[in-house]
Length: 150
Image (spheres, rainbow, N blue to C red):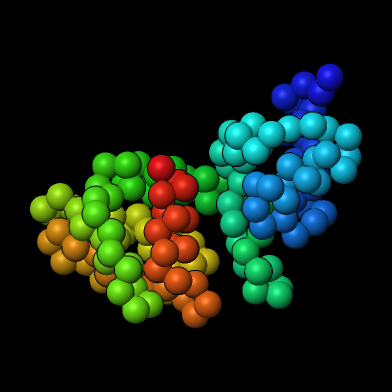
């Protein structure tokens, strides 16, 4: 039986050595190394380890280890999303996000500071944030990524 510490250590090694994009790929890689873990366990491990998704040289989003500054920015993003993220609407290459009145700028700042590879930039009003997706990322994919940080 593998301990949580051993499983998480193996996850860290795997994401450094392989381009793993999904929780299912991480779970498959663990199984290939003799560690049986369901996706829910892998999901918790990824969150606890603070893994981030970055674009690799081929442009594919893959899991990576965060730096200390990344962890702070991502913690701020998580807090801002939990407090301010409201209804979202996909429109073209933009994700339109509603916030409580007066909080759009705080959410846009947190999204911009997080440096997510899916985000080209933001524009904020009083209670609405327009989040522009980078080429190749749809607003639906971006919404899923933002909600995963919650």
